[in-house]
Structures are given as structure tokens and as C-alpha cells.
Amino acid sequence: ACPGWWKKSTGKLKAQFWRICIFMLEFQIPKIEDREWAKSILAGAEGMGNEFAFGTLFLWSKAYNCRICRHGEFVFVCYNYGTGEDLYTYPIGKGNLREALEVLRSDAAERGVPFRLWGLSREDCEELEDELPGRFSYEPFRNDFDYIYRSQDLIQLAGRKYHGKRNHLSQFSRNYSWSYEDISPENFEDVRKVAREWARQNGVDESGGLSSENQAIFKALEFFGPLEFSGGLIRVDEKPVAFTIGEEINSCCFVLHFEKALEGYTGLYAVINHEFAARRLEKYEYVNREEDMGVEGLRKAKLSYHPAILQEKYVASPREQT
Image 1 (tube, rainbow, N blue to C red):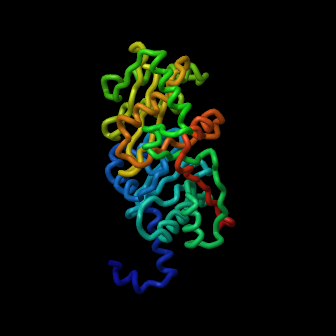
Image 2: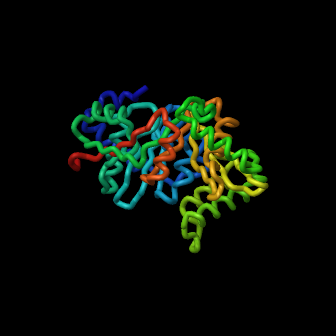
Image 3: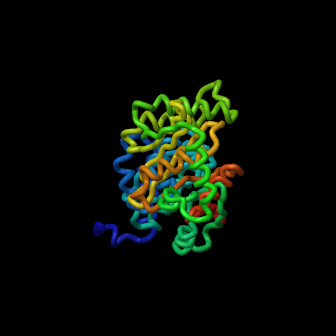
């Protein structure tokens, strides 16, 4: 319940209160200890975008200068924090949305950065426009759209549209002696080998240290248990050649953070995709395979699995600074 002084306060006094409260917002690099509180809010929001997974925030915090903050029953997220190109994620959680937006707007004003919001769905844009009409312009970012599939489509590969995928699986089994195993501490080093070799095959220069993606993969392995990740590894003639790693967003949706397969094995991507889905994802209605980053080959491959949902992502920018 609201205290009596709050009920009696004028709008001006309330605005002053929020300006004071903004100093209590402390955006920090996500730590593994944050997972317990953040996961409950993220899952409770019932979204299916990859930003609703704690692992996304945790693994990519360095690459995207990601910071998080708790405000009541909301998770606030800011990418490129402190660079002047800051992007706040649309408030994730349940509660007073207008209040949450005002707190974030005040934070942006205090830090002298534009109040821009990222990751809005079409429905979020409509909601934001209802709350703050005429304040924002909206731009879709196609490269950030998430590909979300029905798990049964990935498992069964039924119908004519998946005929080619089924052929890839059959050909792979005829051509190679292969095996599947779940990822565990016993094969972490094999996963690292595949990640390093994939980077070499694809011209990623790691001479000065790990690429940002391999840093994220190795971090995923380091915190595999605490993050409650799961994954699968494929071997051909006992050699590790492909892996996938992901986590539960909520009881309805699982997100795949990484999927890597070495060159020289026709159908290998189809195999790691299908085997992990068939063995570990049947209880979920949807599987999020994340975005294509504008990479033409990756976009073509993800579209070839016929996503049930192409999760739109918009950026809302202020029409004028206030």
C-alpha cells in the first residue's frame, strides 16, 4: 500500500521524488549471483526473445557492455553502457510500466544520454505509444529479429517442407560413423576444441586472444552448471565436430545460444540441430534460435527451418529531447 504522504503529494513532488530515487539505480555487470532474482523476473515476464534469458545478459556483458539493475519487479538492462550510444531494453517484468519508463528516462537524463529503448515487439510499440503518445519514433532492426520454431517441427521434420532436412540426416548416417552425447564437464575441452577449430576455419583471428564469441562460449562452459545450461556434442569417428548450448527461458520456450559445426561433414548442422531437439527439447513448445545478425548464409539457413514466429525487434527513439 502507498504511504499517506505519497497519496497526498502533488505531481510535482512525485516527480522530484523520482529524480532523487534515480540515484538509487545502480547498473552493474551481471554476476552469476544475480541469476536467482533475475531469472524469476525474466521467466515471469513470459517473453520468448533471447533477451529474456539470463544467459544472454551474462555471457555477452563484456562484448556489448551490458549492465543490469533491479527496480521492484522489473529488470532494467542497458547495452553499450557509458558510451553515449546507450540502449535500454524495454522494461522486463510486471508492474507500473509508466513509472518504470519514467525512472529509466530520468536515468538517461542524469547521465546525459538519449533515452532510446531496444528490443520492443510490435505489441510493445503499441503499448509504449498508449502510455506516452507521440513521444517516440519506431524503427525495426531486421538483423536482430529472433527465429522461433515449434519444437515438434524441429523434432519430427514432418511434411514436404522438411524433405531436404530428412535427406541430410539420412545421408549423414550413411556416410559417417557418428555419436551424440550431452555436454558435461567430461567433454568441455572437446567443445572448446570445436569452437577454436570453427573460428580457424571461418577466418576468425584469435592470435591476440579469444574472439568475443569464443569468450562467451568458454564462459558458458565455466558457468555451465550454475546457469543450468544444457547442450549436445556430435563426434565423427570419435572426433568432436559439432556442439550446441542453450538454456530455458521459461516453461514454454528454450533458447539456443550457440551452434557450431566443422566444415567437411555434409549435413552436420542438420544432425546437431535435430539430435539435441529430439533428445532434450520435447517438453518445450517453442525453440528460439536467436538472430541472424544480417549474415546472408545464416539467414537463409534459419529461414529454411520455417520459423513459426519471426520475433520482431524495434528501437524506440525520442522524437525530441526532453
